[in-house]
Length: 340
Image 1 (cartoon, rainbow, N blue to C red):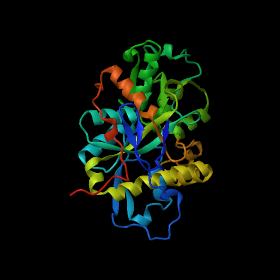
Image 2 (image 1 turned 30 degrees about the horizontal axis):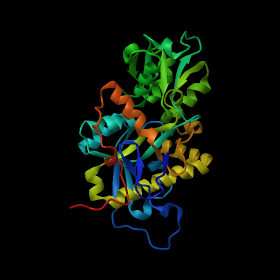
Image 3 (image 1 turned 90 degrees about the vertical axis):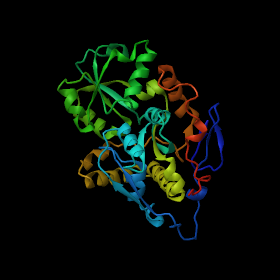
Image 4 (image 1 turned 45 degrees about the horizontal axis):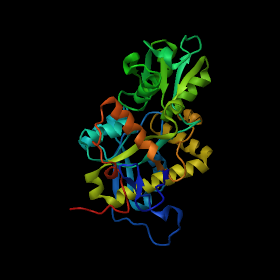
């Protein structure tokens, strides 16, 4: 079952009553009325090295300018959990993190709302775990006692490995996880400082370079372990949405519009992403390896996107049953109203 941000109205999602309303149908319509500039806002955010989010693309495409919406780069994030901490502390206005990290953060008392899925995983747009060609590691079972690099602990790659081990009957501590920033992934693997390099779906620019340099092979991907689902979400604080419902709405609408544009114009998207990477001091040539956001048209959310991780976290004991009221964690633009 899929729920598109383009469809207004509450729809049941999950047996617990997970309801989500889509974005305004204005995305698909042409209006002669002037843009609404009644809620201008500058969104502070922490981008990820080697990747560009849909809202960053929307800003570059000029989708936000008519509404007085801007982005302010506050420095690179060390991973999704770091952006969640920053959002909780009020130093940024949005966070972007894996679903598992978002759910854990909400369960721990942070009043966050899921704004839109920033990325999805599917065949061709997925996280890949690489080894050197001469490595004795052939299967997930061979990971026991080995060292695996991840971008950060407690996020997508971490939990993908835990789930992969669980499916093979192995405990989560069967492997040692080492945090390695994206730009150092290839170096640490080739220097044999790690046995396996975990390259996230959002790090395709780094993964493409690793493959181009040769001498590596994949062991498994996250889609083989998790299936197709949203890899993570952009989230807001609830008090922010209460104060700036229109800005939040136009921000999400623009991001989804940009994601849809990239689906129809992948080569143009790569060129623009290369320019954005170069503008912030990164290697823009890596954009040629960008594979897309992995989202379907309209950036839909499916029940599997959330229920999979609710079940996995509950099984581990990190998310008590009933801890999260799923019907309250989705930003619904059509219902958001300013509160004093």
